[in-house]
Amino acid sequence: MRGFSAECRMSRFSCGQKVVGVLLLARLSSVVAVAAAIPATPSPSPTPVLYSPQTLAELKQLQQAALQSDYAYRQVAHLANNIGPRLSGSAQAQKAVEYVAGEMKALGLEVQLEKVMVPHWVRGEETGALLQFPGQAANTTQKIVLTALGGSVATPAGGLTAEVVVVRDFDELKSLDKERVSGKIVVFNHSFDKQMAAMDHGGEAYGQAVVYRSDAPSAAARLGGVAALIRSVGSAAYRLPHTGQTDYTADAPKIPAAAVTEEDADLIAALVSQGPVRMRLVLTPQQLPDAVSHNVIADLKGTEHPEQVVIVSGHLDSWDLGTGAIDDGAGVAVAMQVPNLVKQLGLRPHRTIRVIAWMNEENGLRGGKTYVRDHARDVANHFAAIETDSGAGHPLGINLVGKPELKLFLVPIAKVLENSGAGLLAVREQAGADIDPLAKLGVPNFSPIQDSRFYFNYHHTAADTLDKIDPHELAENAAINAVLAYGLANVEQPLPR
Ligand SMILES: [Zn+2]
Image 1 (tube, rainbow, N blue to C red):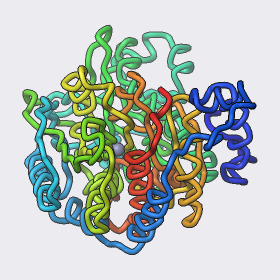
Image 2 (cartoon, rainbow, N blue to C red):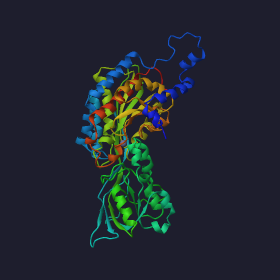
Image 3 (cartoon, protein in one colour):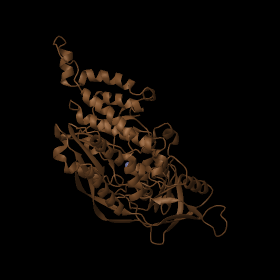
Image 4 (cartoon, helix red, strand yellow):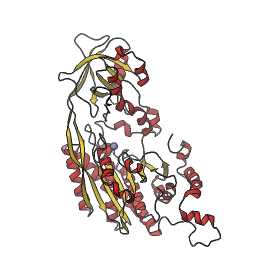
């Protein structure tokens, strides 16, 4: 597994501190190395100062202010309720760009809209029905609750009718003769590991199941399947289908692809085990020409190193079924809160704090990719990047991506965050999809460690709505963003990279 053992998680970052302490002696900055190598040399400061007493006091102020403020909640409420779903290329996505830009200008930030060309996929009609199945009453059908996967092609105008074949996983599909699959609708009935999610490993459970959403359609098409249905990638059974992007590969025809609910996957599998099942599937999505959209970039200029940038971010686009409250209006809102609090408290960051509302995380990652391309010559000045994109649940601490020595730089920040139960530090492989291209170029990446037990109940469903956000837990995430972003903006030493 990635990160800490369960034991270490129980004791917050104490295990990590010991491990990192050893690593650090060998590898931290030259100041430590010199002090260790020449112990006789008198030194006024045996270890480098990471945060001035003033900065540490300001971090505590920021934390308290964040926990008491409803600014972030009001921002996500506006994005979810007043603007609504914000799929790339939609009028709502454009409205959200204008809204966030306006709010950041109102705080006095320097705002740029950076152009991003985004895929423009539009959902259409989507229905499924079993027309023939064992034990059926005369002249009846069984409704199947489903939703098209992002990027799916359409069925023929009148729909597509075919026999159904069910497989548990890719291995079972491979074990079937081509004629068992050819001409059929292939249902991938692969379960999401709910127990793993219940133990706060929701991200890992998602990672195991989501490969079916991305890869199943082309896998079915390679064997002649005419449509692919996956069991929804989610942790709750309220007969809600979970959408999300699928990825067709070039070596297979594009076939219509949808997610059925967990309950409907079980229903189909049960009937198919009894005898032949025929199904009609109607999907009418459209892939329109790429559209012009934008990343919103808002700078609160640093006083000492304005050219050095600490990014704090979330993604502004969302899926179209819900209102994009937890994915990822919440992430944008807690990023917007950072300059709001810094301004409110009259603080002056040494480096520039750059809020970014990314466009097109969900179905293309064009925002993150375009940013790195457009800022390629300036990557060295990107001091750090933070993204919040795992909902709005209670945060336990900070994920970090980069050199293990980074952890020492975070210990004083974690100490402040311990007050709100967020003192854990975990080294990860990825912190956020939009900032990951920067991590690949050596920019340290960070994200809050968020409660993942319930996030995938609602993720990419019609139930991703504002009521799923607890205002206090959202404020706790804002506190992490504010303390971490301001701390990184004012840290007295360069971060290892
Ligand atoms: Zn997201």
